[in-house]
Length: 142
Image 1: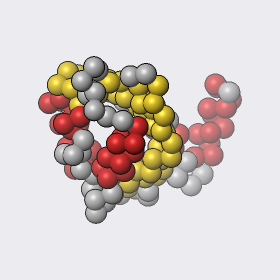
Image 2: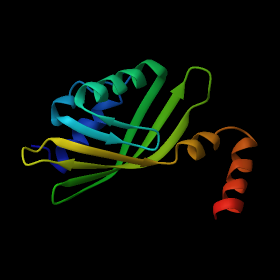
Image 3: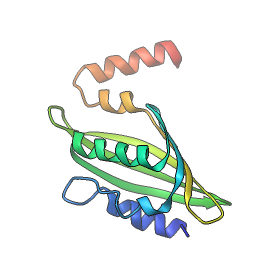
Image 4: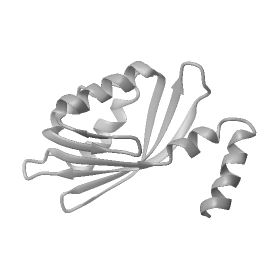
């Protein structure tokens, strides 16, 4: 059964193996009917979730995650993280985000919802463009 402490331990190992992520040690903690959602996609089922992790591994030159905070409330575990991504032709970017993991009665993850600002965090690392993007966002939405 997943606990807050076990999530901290396992997720810290996922992204720090020679720069390439490896989910093999945490996939057994996911239910076969996992529903994963983030700002880009919604995925249903362990096969599609596993395929998504493999695509991310292939695209990433380097990927690291720092777990900043974790909490457990009833059948939910919340983690706050900082993910450093490095793609082939672009500078490293840090994404700041959090995840909500919902557990079933067997302690497996049935739902994972990731929250982050993908474009804002990436654009911040592009000279001049990041500032222009932030000004636009404040003007239109702030």
